[in-house]
Length: 364
Image (tube, rainbow, N blue to C red; front, side):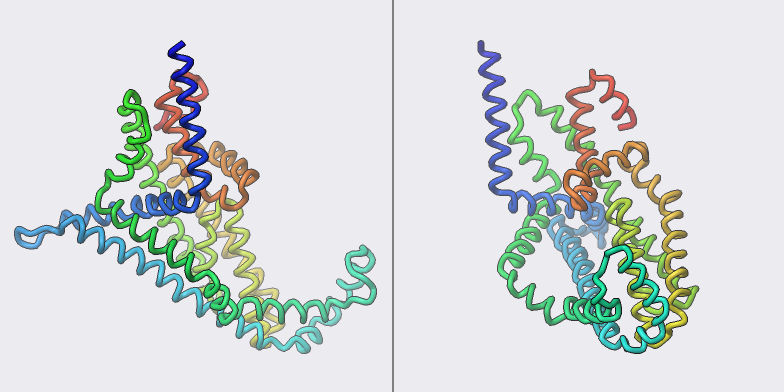
């Protein structure tokens, strides 16, 4: 009888916890983001704490502040790099002579239009030329810096609160490495305390390796793409390389998105300079560089990150990412591997008698 009451209370506790997480989802999100940032920043904090000037060493609080400032500097640097890129691309698009483009590609556009009409994709009174002009003007207006700043101004209050909350929490997580684990232990029954400590320790170790490896992959892809495009003499190679590498944070779909962005920037840049005869060459060169870079990524970089850091097989990771993508789209694909790592560690600690769990967690 007491056992039934115990089970019922446990279930009720989980239900209440789930409702609280749902109700305070934004706060939970801030805490999780801060925890991830602290995982990335802890190696730097530990390194700074080991530095000694004569007999004095860095206090952990000061080390945490420096690490937080470094991460903030990286984020601000990305923003300062990204905003001018958008502004420049909008300027390039606005400079495209659409009459010259349509005149140069008149014959293939007419053939394409006839094909689309035969397939009932467009009406007979529609023309591809007018549609392209409308789309270019619309896109140029959409990515203008003025509009972006106006949209940001509308969410300044909530954005500022979110950034401040994340910075505040990240600082204390960096300063006290055990703060987040200790908070988790407060929610766990006393009899499961040792198992929970083991789980937290393994999760922290695996996720630290994963996030550091992921950062290394992004930087490597940015470098490979930029160098490859520079060799072919593609203009805006640094911009395309930066955006293409950054998109690799999205598993599997990221390279396609990054490649599409790269081709778009390459085409619009060539059109803005009137290099109509170079459009096809630039497109093939950009595609070739992205394919080569991603082959290197798939053969060398990803196995080191996914197989070595989170101790999972490539096929296993692929299935997890596909399932997460079908459930939650791109955010699900990004969070799939960290979430799967957490679930595997928990399953190994509490469900180790199950054969499937033994198989999936044998390398942890």
